[in-house]
Length: 297
Ligand code: GLU
Ligand code: ZN
Image (tube, rainbow, N blue to C red; front, side, top):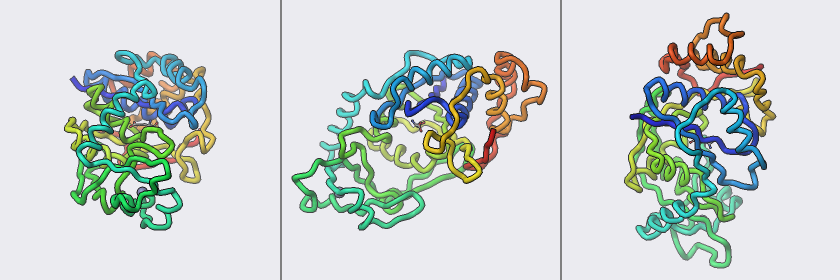
């Protein structure tokens, strides 16, 4: 049995961009008789909004999504993350890093993914014992290659293109890559469907799966909705919160965005009718093979 998930970060209400990931992963897993779980990625309290997690769940429920099992909250999983960090420290793969963002910016090379960590704190003598330390995972120069169900083959050489990356931040919070890998494994996720903004995170996650000896799921990265200026719809770009009263029209628009060519008459049908159409017509092969697409309402 295959199993997928939707893993929102509760930094604000659901918007069209996050709805695309929810609908895509739901249909792709349900249409293969798979299960579909929800995980709340509440790892970063300063960026979260009180009530957002409940609001997201109410919106999903209002859209007619049905999820399997209990919702998992990453804020309640700290013990599991600490155990993995202890294991990686013991095997020598994790090391404390006291570099500031400014120091890394000055010393590291920049590329399309950001600044490559220059490896400073691999040398214990270069660490500043008086500062709080982050925990960084040692990378190597083997190429990580995977085949994305929409985007095709994708590869990265982590050491040269990304550099050693954080699993725990200097402010004490756990990093997304750590939590996502530990929880996907714990929840037995086999089919990850999410936005293309996470495509370049995937090799880091596969690398960590390999170190932890857990299975690598299959990956499907959907096109991301961007505004006219090419910015991803998000809270930062003032993406509009979803209006639950418009649910059926929004679902139709997501199906249209994902290349499913829903009948135009369907646009004004009820939510159950549109879902029914979606369950019988969903085809991953119709999703455009692009990383971004402009969307304006
Ligand atoms: N929490 C992440 C986000 O909202 C998604 C993580 C994932 O799907 O792997 O961007
Ligand atoms: Zn450092």
